[in-house]
Image 1 (cartoon, rainbow, N blue to C red):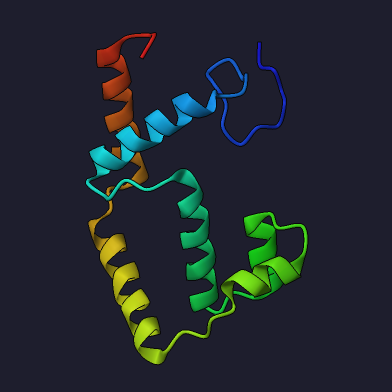
Image 2: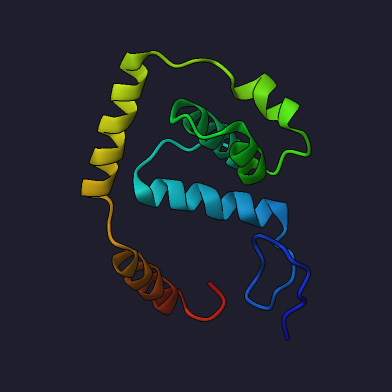
Length: 121
């Protein structure tokens, strides 16, 4: 039975994930993806910086980042990116879109990994 606590991440049964287990799983997925391992919280800053660089309205960014006040979002992410930064982000987006596996490929991979590990993995 699902615990129904409204968590963003939960175990298979719906209970909260222990932070230590989440961090370990996050690190493993970074390594599998071949990207530099960072703290999960750093992904929030990356998201905020990308939203600002892409000119997403601060109110929308505030909602996405779940800040309680728009002032928090504005204080942290209001650096104005250069045109060169915008070109780099556009190039990065195109590269990610071209190189990223499709959702079905990702699901197939993670299903295979889980199957190989068994029900406790």
